[in-house]
Image (cartoon, each protein chain N blue to C red):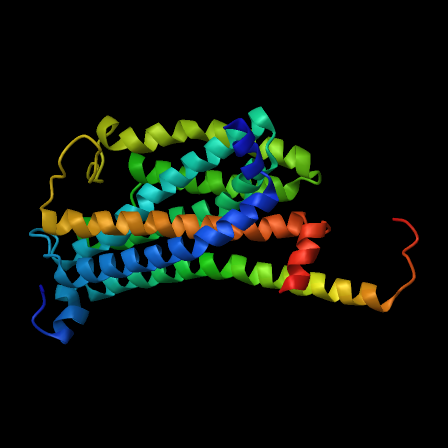
Amino acid sequence: MWNWFHRLSAPKSFFELSGKLLPWFAVLAVLALGLGSVWGLVFAPPDYQQGNSARIMYVHVPASILAQSSYMMMASAALVFLVWRIKLADIAVQCVAPLGASITFLALATGAIWGKPTWGTWWVWDARLTSTLVLFFLFVGVIALRSAMESREAAGRATAVLALVGVVNLPIIKYSVDWWFTLHQSSSFSLTEKPAMPAEMWMPLLVMVIGFYLFFAVAWMLRIRAEILQREIRTQWVRDLVLGQ
Amino acid sequence: MSFSSFADFIHMGGHGLFVWSCYAITLVVLVANILRPLQLKKKLIQQKLRALRLEAEQPVAPTGE
């Protein structure tokens, strides 16, 4: 088990394995996102209160869920790097930060656009929105901290620590709708309870959530592969790879 | 299907601008996140190829680093 894990965590092995997995994930991601979008935009019923603006849900909710998950994954990779010094984990932290920042931006932007027709305002400084904005700045902070430091080793450790400290923000986002008075509605999905919305709405939403996760897997792998090439550009296997193209 | 015509679908009951701009931003963010690393990978491979070709043209061993 350990042996296998160690071999996989070698950048070269990851490069080869991800190369085999990528086409499958990419096809599934396109299928899920295509199916979910058409289902949500065309076939799902309009909301009885919000009308057709509720269709924004099919991109806003998956983006928001993914934004938080990607932070969790960044923090997990950071922990692995700090404890076991696995190079691949440091690469994973570095590569998920811009991805997480852009997904969090997407959650904030679609939320603002949805807020206008629903609440009558683009933005309110309430707990859910503010803590999500903090999440965005945490991702940006990780990117900025890394680019500000000269030594890769020191930058890796510093960003890993920052990523771990920022985890305190995650429960704040999750419970903000219960702890404070807020305009934002409470969770659409939970693992333990049946969704409050009808099946014609939560089924396309679930397909979109799955599609966003698949997209995330593809985008993360692509970034990690490019970063591996960059870091290992002087090695024999990259030389062989380039010449074999 | 919850729309009676294509114009209805575009109009989204008056919320068309909000709905479509959300989907447009989503598309841009997702596609950009796929294209960026692909471009970087292509650039790295081209740089490496150029370096290897230069190396092949100059048979003199580099004098240390």
